[in-house]
Image (cartoon, rainbow, N blue to C red):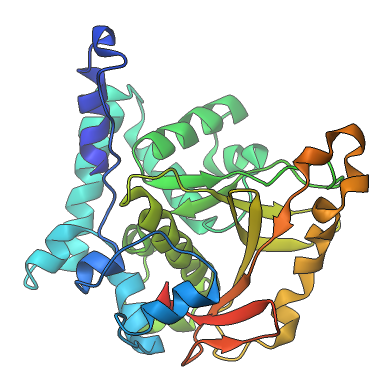
Length: 315
């Protein structure tokens, strides 16, 4: 878990370079919690249909109980462990041992405040100046502290997808808290029901979906091929999987019936399929794969011939 990362890496000698394999251990995935088969998430309909037989349907209330509880193994190993007490202890240990002693951040409370501000930004693009201003630190300090949160697997930064055919893409990475339970604790959400009804309900849902897809690759020993799209016209696609020359768009909606407007921005990717957009670099042309709208639908349903509504419990 994240509390061990700095200490372990600090003790790895440079002389072991090339002979050490580093495995990132995050919190539990749904597959681990519910003891279901785990494999890297794919958007193809055949892959999703195969998963229907091994995944259990879960309703909105159960999904938000899972989002609120988070991913820490101790909370699932012993049902008597108090959620708030556990996360309070976790944060105190993280600040005192990792942040003060190993990352050598002098002001623990200022870093705690920074963590809380970052939690409030989950599923949003990074603007270092805004984070710095809200936390009362310099932009370089905000950048350094954010990198500490990445290194200790508190958050992941999703990079924007770049392609020569896409001209107006923003370059800011996207923040996702990897443990939604920790984010809920930091932001003082008291129970799953309040979180589900609250202003950050959608943001937590997005980060939960991202985290599950992200862990599905890491748990298979693969680098997650995950990006996102946002341009200067404010058109956004929540996630993109880019594998083997195929780009698969994913939109995330808490709604049970998001409608076809959920895929309206997928068409911004069309230029990457045209050889003429690349001139002499036509080998950079990309194929657009099956798209997914991950949502609270009850079943796997087609949006159109190329895209599917994917129930969140199926990822």
